[in-house]
Length: 157
Image (cartoon, rainbow, N blue to C red; front, side, top):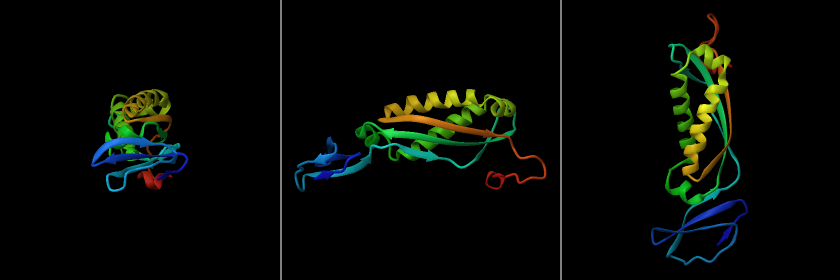
């Protein structure tokens, strides 16, 4: 079996984890070993469209984010979570909603660094347990549209 550069293969023997194969040529037992999944070890970027999040004062702010991450350990990335991209997106959204609910809309827009720090800490600590390294988080917080302008996030841009 050949594993291309920048990828890894998680191998199971008779339904149980056996090993992780790195780039190169490897021998596997036919009918006993099977490839559970092939993992891309390069940097991946996850982006989110603008989403309305309610702040602690009841006003909405529009938040969009981009997370750069890489899988560093294929075994937990395969067995701990089903889909790393969806898990990272949901974790980021949950952390954003939780932190935005503790502040005012004005503070979230004028000082997004506080929001960024908290979300980054949650993201970095949790993804580490999944065998994933979160490398960068870009966060944009915008106020709601003024009266008379489109109000939904899709029309806002």
